[in-house]
Image: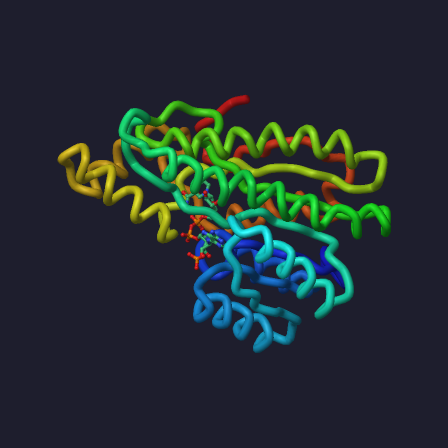
Length: 260
Ligand SMILES: NC(=O)c1ccc[n+]([C@@H]2O[C@H](COP(=O)([O-])OP(=O)(O)OC[C@H]3O[C@@H](n4cnc5c(N)ncnc54)[C@H](OP(=O)(O)O)[C@@H]3O)[C@@H](O)[C@H]2O)c1
């Protein structure tokens, strides 16, 4: 097993990509702390993991709130003794409209969840990792950070910001035994965020959801979206010792859509 005796905090672990990462990591021997706002969803995932014989705790939290981030790291460490791995995955797409229609409040909220939340948790988790001389942080960014899709400027800005933060924290942490990487998934069509976005885009474009999705998937080399499990497999690799020489990188897991 790749994560025996490791402790992982996974934000947004109640469904979608975060849930797949939590299940994958637990299956590889990690104890996992799953944080999100919807108690019933994180409880269900934690239960599923415990039923399979691994350790899990559900922590209700909004990563946009500093006190909640403090509680996530504190509860994970008090339950399992430490935090070896942090996966900043929690997120929502935010407003689907052109920038001139986006309010400052809408803008701030998206940045607060994706970018500020990842910053808060990183600064809280790092001291313990430095003390042990080991750790891995993974930021779930997006193809949106590298591409140019209309009607999602705060989301793209937050996700691109996460890539800058990934490189800088990797530079600060490398000689202290901590690796920091990012994944840029393409469309993971099974998740709530992806379905809601597809529906809204289709309405705005005046086409059916199926047409909207087909057009987008056609621009990808493989001609299909990715599964949450495919993202989780890449997350497992980057957070395990199998990736011991990889830091400061953004791995595209997008079926061939971005090429830098
Ligand atoms: N699906 C895609 O196509 C795609 C592509 C590229 C990148 N991503 C990224 O992958 C990550 C996961 O997305 P997903 O597709 O799996 O979406 P999802 O199924 O909607 O899951 C999002 C998760 O994040 C949690 N979350 C949202 N806002 C939160 C907050 N403020 N505090 C704590 N938890 C919060 C949600 O739970 P609650 O709502 O209960 O809090 C949920 O558990 C996101 O960062 C997303 O931007 C997704």
